Image (cartoon, rainbow, N blue to C red; front, top):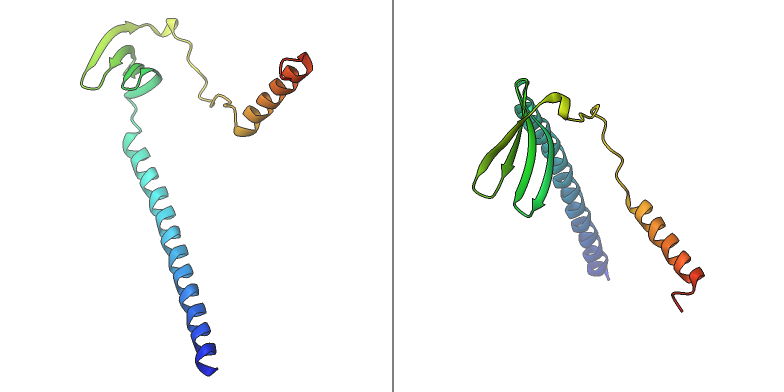
Length: 127
């Protein structure tokens, strides 16, 4: 009987130790990731080079508008090559004010699908 109680206590202590170590590793991972993100951001921030806009054409092909000094360039980026397409004047560009455009969240998409399903049922399409 005494061995059973002692065995249960040991199991509980082992579980709590593993849980605490897991949480400690998780916290260290979080803070190291935040630190690395800040470090990379400070290395990337540059006054002379900026990627203004990127559009993906396929998996590994992109067209980017970049600012180099006071000039804007359109470049094609492929898997192994980067090709300058043309220089673009600032007047031809529609530059954003730096605010992040609103993207649809999961709830917005779910609501849209639900509304579409309700409309289809009302129209008699889904019988």
